[in-house]
Length: 452
Ligand SMILES: Cc1cc2nc3c(=O)[nH]c(=O)nc-3n(C[C@H](O)[C@H](O)[C@H](O)COP(=O)(O)OP(=O)(O)OC[C@H]3O[C@@H](n4cnc5c(N)ncnc54)[C@H](O)[C@@H]3O)c2cc1C
Ligand code: SF4
Ligand code: SF4
Image 1: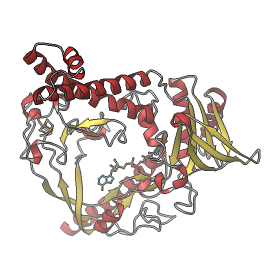
Image 2: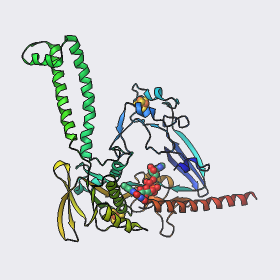
Image 3: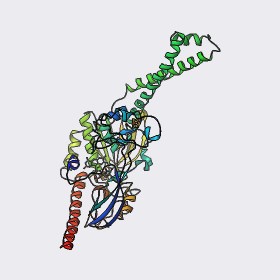
Image 4: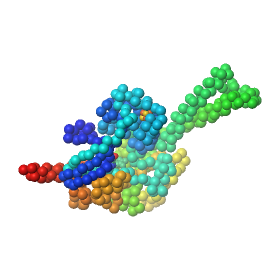
């Protein structure tokens, strides 16, 4: 990624969208909208001072909503270019309210609330589509109760929990526990606000709220509206303090998830959704179980799958090593249902096809290995490019030319074409680059011939 950012022959147009494509192989005119960041990339040093001071917080999409970010943010830490972006949907200033804190704090004078989108026209010889995939939405499988049971998460959510730069600093905290912790901060803010109001009363009447409240409840001061307000405020304050203390007490019992269940083929190899194998999910579940065990050696994982597809050099050995040294048990069978037990523990109901028995077991956390689904924007993008999609919504290619789309000069690589892992995507990207180079070489040759 860094190399791409530095390469003299590569111009990176991040935070940009293709709006129109005209022309043919060797001579395409591409219209690109470079969206306003409201932060000038050439001035921003990436110091992050603006993000630290911004008062607006929203769920962080990069962390799958498991944490928050501010309205001026970097989508993820290693992004190129290393700059910040103001989210126009949530920034106070851009929505007509008073703020401007980030502009005041930025030493590089990089904030520009008046920045506009730029429309660019590019002339290119070939196009490579590498728009990737989307994670299948497991709430379409009602029996797995994703979003109903808090401790049922997708593999991508689990990877954010496992990440040292993620919302929990790499601790596998359970979403049900995180929800309790998230309630603490607003309560603490409420207590600060109500304490300030109570202090004003205490100064005015020269006694503590507690002393006053004891006299008030014994029947003194009846009919005084101002004192009634004080009593009501103090009562509310006591209620919030009590709730906060109860929540803090509860958090003392919280422990990271140590009994993990991975459920394979969620949306894949399923005739209701995608009948084919997504290729990478067996291996990422094993990888995640191994990493979880490295973080916390007491962690055990049960991987439920019809079979484990460890296809690739060294993959089978990795699978066996996971079983021998990382606390992984492989259960052959498809999970029928997940229910919720005590303490928000998900209960997995499954048939062990080796034992020919229907069992149920409870876990701390269930991780769904979701299918590789076509990218949501692919239909729109395919119309702009004039290329055909296959029956599932991936880019249509032929078995003999797996990087050629239905339009000459437009190529595809990676999961935009079909599910595949990173090494396969990289190999396909090289192949697409080679096909694009052929087109450009040919059109240069024709141009030279025409001049001669
Ligand atoms: C939980 C999980 C764990 C995984 N772990 C591994 C692993 O350990 N090893 C491994 O080999 N594989 C792993 N994979 C698979 C891996 O994610 C894919 O193989 C890989 O990301 C495919 O690369 P890609 O470039 O085709 O697509 P992507 O990585 O999806 O990249 C596509 C990019 O295009 C951008 N984009 C989309 N639409 C547009 C548009 N219209 N305009 C501009 N940009 C656009 C997207 O924002 C994205 O940045 C994992 C997958 C999952 C779900
Ligand atoms: S102007 Fe917008 S982005 Fe800047 S600090 Fe205020 S809310 Fe945050
Ligand atoms: S890779 Fe494994 S989990 Fe993913 S679809 Fe194929 S068999 Fe199922």
